[in-house]
Image (cartoon, rainbow, N blue to C red; front, side, top):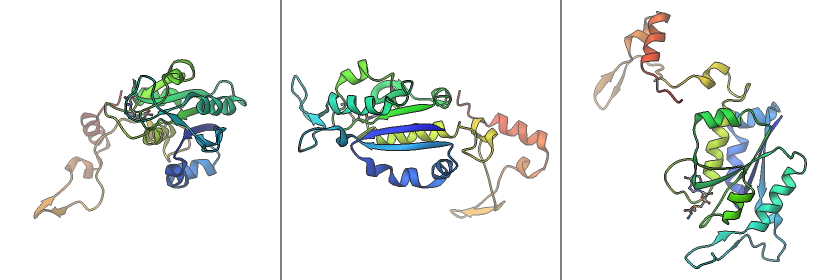
Length: 213
Ligand code: SAH
């Protein structure tokens, strides 16, 4: 069984995500397990401090090294080969090819930043890879963790019904009804899809495919 270990200061954000949909089913089928860890459990002070002011000044707070380092050490104890991923808008852009590469790993540890980010020593000396999900800045690494887990899990055999649909690039899809009024106009579907001509359908789909790689 594969494992995803998420390190976050907002574990509640993952409740619905891990307990619903295909991810819940895949976990029941023991295809993989998603573990959510509250970073605060690795603090030692009364206030469970995970952040501090940036050296050099500036606004906001930065996630400290110690709790993250402890978390990673603890999670890695059982599996030295677990891959450590840190989320940062300055990281390497996540794509389908990366998702396929990660799908082959046994265990992935995902570190979600918050506030003004994470002490750079985590990127330099703890993380194996630093990843961005796009050229925009979010509030935290939790949504990126979810995006990456969804993309990877589709590549793991048994997670979605037909294995072939997980690897196929994307073409437009239509379903019933054949015709429907939208804003006063009847809107149909491409005739070829109703023709029953599998060769023509395949050609149409190939022509209208967005290649992901
Ligand atoms: N000032 C920081 C931004 C911090 S955003 C900087 O320029 O790096 C807070 C956290 O959200 C980051 O530490 C990261 O974990 C996450 N995050 C924000 N945008 C992201 C993106 N596009 N991809 C991946 N993670 C992102």
